[in-house]
Amino acid sequence: MSRRDHRDNQRQPFGSRLRAARAARGPLCVGIDPHPELLQAWGLHDDVAGLEVFARTVTDALADRVALLKPQLAFFERHGSRGLAVLEQVVVEARAAGALVLADAKRGDIGSTMRAYAEAFLDPRSTLAVDAMTVSPYLGVGALTPAFELAREHNAGVFVLARTSNPEGEHLQSARCRDGRSVAECVLDEVRRRNGDEAPWGSYGVVVGATLRHAFDADVGGPVLAPGVGAQGAEVSDLPAIYGPVTPCVYPVSARSVLGAGPEVGALRAAAEALNTECAQILG
Image (cartoon, rainbow, N blue to C red; front, top):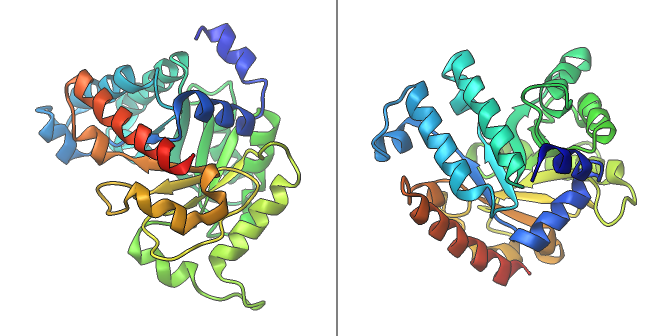
């Protein structure tokens, strides 16, 4: 995909582009998580050079065949400005190959600060501009309004943390608000309201972890990111029971289960394709 083709493609809302990517490439989202243990397993040093080899190898292997690539920003930021320069390269190369890029940033603040975070990842003028970013609603979903507005302006997407895959989140996210809804349910309801009746999908999604052991209504009129498949313990076969009628909106996230097959490009592709095929067969 040329730069011009990508600009033309981005005239469509993120929700529409994501559905099209799913139809063409399947539902799998692969995380790019160059943490020290994986670098070591690949025989790489935990430095900028190792980071670059790792991240660009994953991009070269998968960007032309999966719908979503999700770089985890923390593992680039820990290497400072040179790590962010690697991220810039990865974003450009991944998008040029046709993948949608989701920055796993988990930003959350208020007012002009939230807008600045959103501009870093959602404004096309930024060197870190991606297709969507993750945000944290701990200061209130309303505080994320600058990100929602910028996403709509630039046909980008936002994924709001709602019910995450880590066990530490259970106590806070299941706590009850004054009206009896859980905190997670309040987040889902607000995202659903913001998507409105946008068809076929809205561009605002949520993160609801695949490690839940009970059904969870995650219908927000948009996509659902499902981290936790593979190394964190969730099986693809678990997903229909967890997400029920919104299963066709679910994008399973896997990082270590795919990345652990590296560093050979062929092995990475084989691992991703096998998991993607399983996801497509089970999720529809």
